Length: 268
Image (cartoon, rainbow, N blue to C red):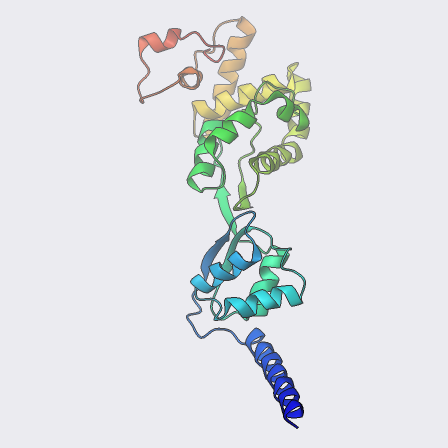
């Protein structure tokens, strides 16, 4: 009789535990619905993911969340990244989001005329990439070749636009997105222009970059371009201040006479 009672008690306990778990999985924690960004670094084990969610007051029980992950067989399928979560989400919804990799994306805008250094600063400030990695990749011959670019650097190939990237996106993928956008938008137009002008694609791109840096007013660019083309035909220097600035390792805002003689292939 005692054994029967123990079995019944054990069975009831198991049923109650299952029912409690089911209710827990479908019940959000009582807390503010204010969204917050939660970072799950690469290589984080599932048990640590549960701890992170608990520390952010998104789940009540780490243990139940660990069980939920094992029962659904997704505890090894967590995708690292930064997630926008809130306390009004059920544990099953939280789990689904980090398994599907529905990460938060940051919008960044690359203004027209920005060079590699300035773009690298934007990415670094947003904590999307280290500026050192952007510099290195923009001058890596093998990487540049893989992007179907025939130039010594990627200067001028990082297309100005608004993009959306998530935390932990590889810097290679970020740059590839910029260059692919350039190929989609600019290559057909530049090829036609190069044919008409009797110049290479790289020469047209370089000259266009110099013109863009020379004046910020679109209405003035045809005039500036005409002046530069005349100087090229006559075989005289462009004498463009932006090329001097680009050639300098550091620039304090003033171009000095000595700067005009800096030994650099970029100095025109």
